[in-house]
Amino acid sequence: MKATAMLLAATVLAGCATAKPDIPMDRLVTLTEAQRKAIEAEVRTHLKDPDSARFGTIVAGANATETRVCGWVNSKNSYGGYGGNIGFHGTLDASGKFRFWGADDPSYLLIPTICRDHGLVI
Image 1 (tube, rainbow, N blue to C red):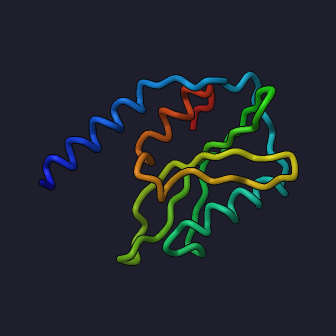
Image 2: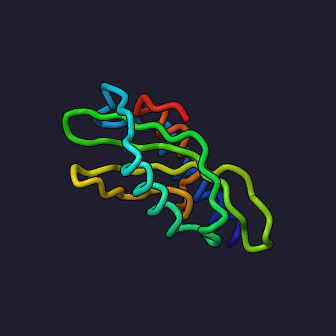
């Protein structure tokens, strides 16, 4: 049963990896300090040890309908050690609120591919 569930999950995720975005980003965006702080604050809410977060590259791109953000974060895991960089992504609205999709989502391994498909390399 467990093997069947794993195979099904792998099949679903593999299908996601080949999907292309509906609307790719057409320009890079330079994030303000306030935007970056909002992004980091939202990502921290999804981590086991928010105070241990170490952010790496964070890039943003925009098109006519959205501003998408992609980045890396490393934080301590349940064992108290750093687990390595995990990708995150989401959208930034006009008010500066960041809608997070990422490290706590089962598709987090696909985030670099999703971001690259949107024209954002992390």
